[in-house]
Length: 416
Picture 1 (spheres, rainbow, N blue to C red):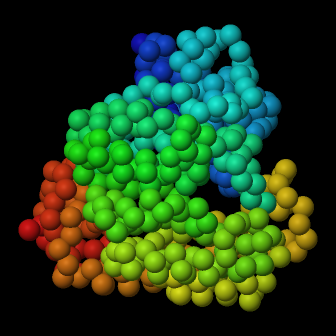
Picture 2: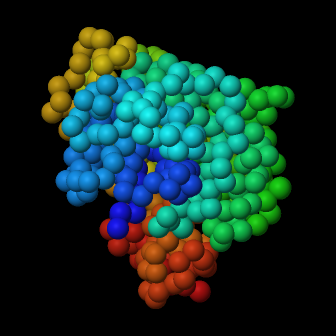
């Protein structure tokens, strides 16, 4: 009997959402002995992991149809088509079309020009396999051209999902028992610019929360520090269902490097943003994406980024050693930093993040927290801190607990 379909998802939360759409398409197309690798191209390491996943999938299931899709496939289709383990290569837009999977055998490589119009309504996702937190795509693509980034080539222009589709998807997920939803996309702060009336991200969130009162907790994926709208600022101080955890696309703490990256903010903008958010909501906690060892970065510039983490009070750091991606402006810049130095600077930032997480957890000791149970003995606080329970809890519930001791980078808590 043919084996069941398998989906291997690499990279961002948007890929997680899209994999669930494809899972439904595979079922409707009655495809069984198939492995789909939904790839990432954000760094050279991400593409390396994609190639490793392809080879592993072929070894594990030698008779299966192996399909590669996602950003790496969209950007470098012929490179993946040339791999002997690969049967089909699909682009990012065509993978979301049921007809692609119904007619899979017709093309070995199927890459289309990325659409420019607003995103059509997606099939409603019933749930996320093995997960207690749901993801909803609100936007795709990016109109900016950061000098290090290939994502616009993999995702196209910024396109938004109409509000009525978001409300329908959010309501369905809440009906399925998900207490927490994360809104995801490539550049979610650009939400609405391509829609009639140009609604803002904050305005959309307010409408979503009003239309879906059963939605208990809402999180946001990465935010552009230069593009947080006033509607979102108002929500930050008013809406308790919006979790006090913002993840910022910071990238560097040095203004010269930020200019070389073609970013639209400065280091002081990040500090002021964090100050403003904490004034509205004192329990706000921040994460940040940071690139270590960007072209031209000196020891002093690296020190500026380290200092920004402390000055802005950043906690959850997602650190990337700079990866010179062929086809980007950054790959052609002078002053490329040696690989060993990039890795050492990345480790500096990760060590700093560990210290910041420990400090945050110690500040939570004695506080009563509403914790989302992800595993019987593990949950997430509103700040995204991991919480260890003394006794097993029902997965998917939100329980009240009091932290009493830090254990590494987790908080031990008693359920009240």
